[in-house]
Image (cartoon, rainbow, N blue to C red; front, side, top):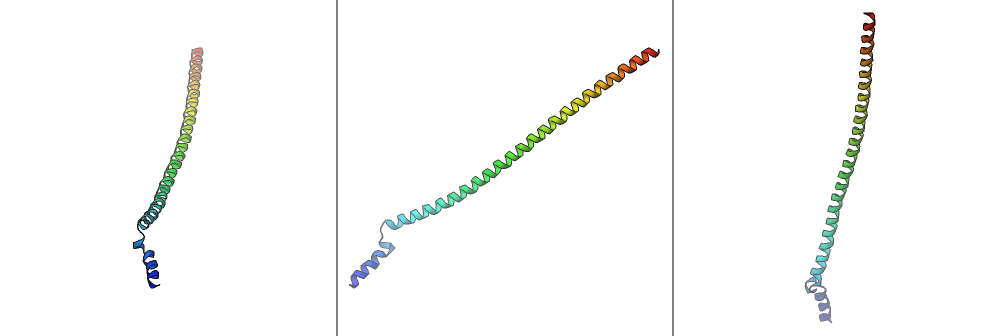
Length: 102
């Protein structure tokens, strides 16, 4: 009876498990490394997503800036054309009025 209990105790010891114990350790280590890898990739993924969102927002701001610049340039062109037309009208009026008075 004592030998039967002793055999069970010996068989229960990890040293007597054969290849199963290292395989189980390997599986646990693989699971742990997979969890760590997933965390690492999750952080990298979130970082890349954040960078893409930041770049998209910057591009939107640049697009708005370009639109404002186009409006500004268009406005300046229109006002410059109006000033040129006004200067031509004033010049022709002065030329005509000086020509009549002479």
